[in-house]
Length: 101
Image (cartoon, rainbow, N blue to C red; front, side, top):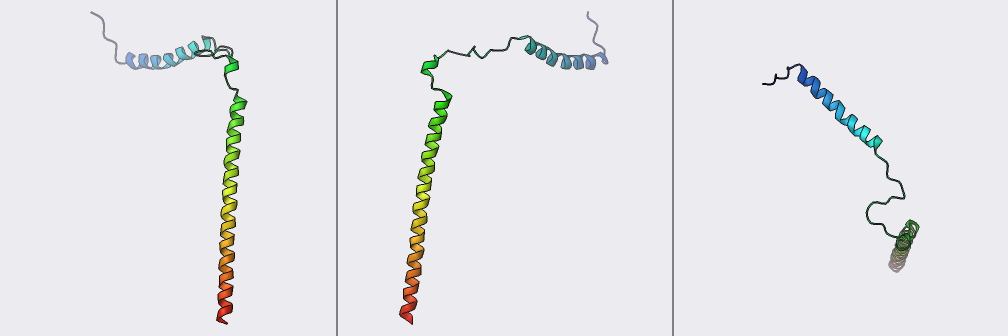
């Protein structure tokens, strides 16, 4: 029959395990060979068939510019409509005031 672990030794062993496990992970990470940039994960897609990052950025910027142009046009149109309404209201108020005098 095995001797039971003394009560004072159990916390010490637990503390040692808690410190050792992260240390083992750190050492394992340091010893593994890092993935080089020429090693791609998964299936390799030839560079000719992949759109470049610059192309995606350019397309995104084109769409954003088109959206901004539409928004600016809508704001210009709305502003012009509101100005015309104000001018019409002022004109009507002026004509009404002249008719009353």
